[in-house]
Amino acid sequence: MDPTLTLIGALMLVISIVLSPLSSRVGMPVLLIFLVVGMMMGEDGPGGIEFDDFELAFVIANLALGVILLDGGMRTRAETFRVGLKPALVLATLGVAMTAGGAAIVAWWVFDLHWLTALLIGAIISSTDAAAVFSLLQGRGLHLNERVSATLEIESGSNDPMAIFLTLMLVTLIANTGDQAGWAALTLLIKQFGIGGIAGILGGFAVVELANRIRLTPSLYPLLVAAAGISVFSATNALGGSGFLAIYLAGVVIGNRHVRMMPMILQVHDGLAWLAQLCLFLMLGLLVNPSDLIPLAGGGLILALALIFVIRPLTVMLTLWPFAFNRRELGFISWVGLRGAVPIVLALFPIIADLPEAQLVFHAAFFIVLVSLLVQGTTMAPLARKLRLEVPAGEDPYRRLPLDAPAAGDHELMLFPLRGESWETPRRLSQLRFPENTAVAGVFRNRVCLQPKGDLEVASGDMVAMFATPGVLPELGKALSGRHAPKYLAERAFFGDFVLNGDALLGDVEQVYGIEFDELPPELSLAECFARRTKGHPVVGDIVTLGPVTLVARATNADQVTKVGLKMDSSRDSQKS
Image (cartoon, rainbow, N blue to C red; front, side, top):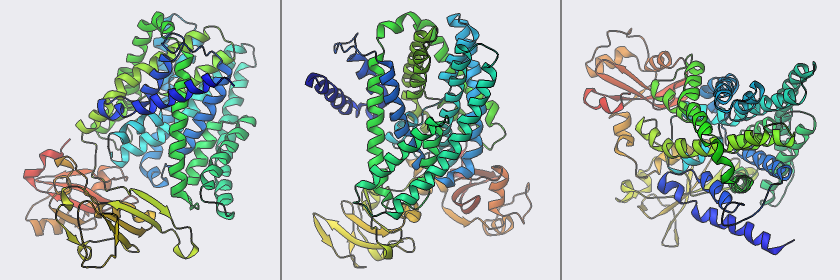
């Protein structure tokens, strides 16, 4: 092996990682940086690397996407399905088909293509990219309300198989124009979704059983899950199913079951997913010469802007209108149609199949991804804040260490740094309210471990070590939170000065606060008010305005609001949509 090639490859990784902090500073998607570095090192750039092995790129890209989808599946919480599953699945199926159709019409017009080739371009660019969306939102410190975040998360993770199916179907139709083409496409649909769904669920449970039944060195558990996930992915592809759907569903099953050393698995897989994304975008950048994009820049720009400003918004409005989304939420979901690696990888299919116009299809998909990352990627975080879709968030642990002992159950050791204005004044440990079944393990200050006595005062700069279970993490994070947040996200500004139980009746609230709710019966509970307004799926941050009072959902359990914030007349305006 030429050492020069390994040196260049390693330097490309180093340059991309060193430049990644620009993402949060200038609002540029970090994946765009990786893509540009790859293009700069390519044949037209100063690097001068000639790389046109599409078959090798196809294999590497598929494995990288498998790793990314496995990590995304493990981070998809089953409880988010109650508010996000139905709308996300509609977007991931019907929405993808509508997007493909709309994009095909524009592609047919601007590129003067055969209608099947235009449909192929539409299918290739029809799916959104989960990694691109959430790496940008999380990098800017956004915590969206559950209805929006769950819908985007599930849609982005589940719409790839639909786009892959449409792409493979159209490649099959173009390559086989005989009488059997329609039957082949139908068979492909059944095999992709049927085999992919069954193999993914069964494979996920098998991985869970395997990880829990054998004793390994802790550092081997993440590798076991990664290898087993790729095995599910590859076996499903060999059987003719959708490996992408299978590995995503396997990840969902793994992430929502008790698995030994799960925090370590997630931590390692976060790094693996970033490495996969980085290598994937660098490689895809190498495949494209900027000079090849110039001839189709005009038509590509028209198609990209139509996709961003017309096709995606229309698709969202037409598919999500039956669900309980307000205008701000619909507007943001419409804008978050970010395209990433998947369209470029799908554009390799026609090249591998040696279809006519394959190079045009590939370059068009690449150009549209570039425009999407530039236009939508740089404006997504500011738009989320402008539309006030954030909700107050607790502090995340600096480190989570599983105890892996039978007597400890699910307990972990969690480290919380104390920081922010709320911890500038020292407070005694006995004054802090922690969830049940938790305990302070110790307090670290200036590299010294202090015993957690009740009269010990803690303040900014200290590190509190807690024994707790993952289920109480949100509540524990809020108890130890001191993060600096905008004024409108402060607890009292967001939820109001008064906290009521969700089962409190409107009639009781009228008597206590001297107000009248003429439009609703007094025997109605506050929780029922939210259920009516949100069609049975309330989330934290939902608002119900009743005359001079604004009610804000403060805590939920399943589909029931358990705590309600009450804001009187003067503070209502800052929360209204």
